[in-house]
Length: 96
Image (tube, rainbow, N blue to C red; front, side, top):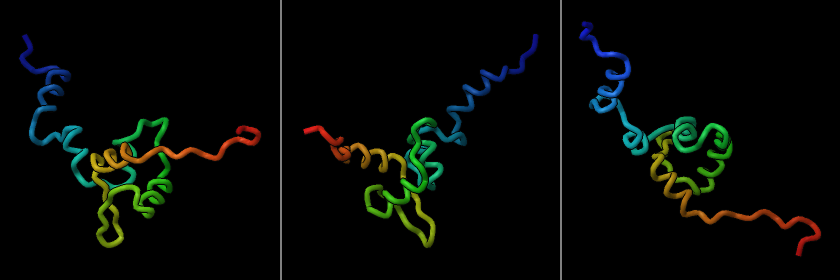
């Protein structure tokens, strides 16, 4: 009988280890803009980096600047995005 753990068992036991960051740990760490996109948005609906930078410069996304680098805390960004009222675009012509 083989006493070696299979890949699934080792993956499950590794998830709870102290060295493997969980999703909650990643949401509380400071990350850069590309990582922020990956953590908060699904692949099909991710905003562009240009949009993230524009919203950062407008003060709509909480961030931390250090020299030329900009860092985000994903949990804080998500909370801020939920508080913003969605804006409506202009009405189509002919609609009253």
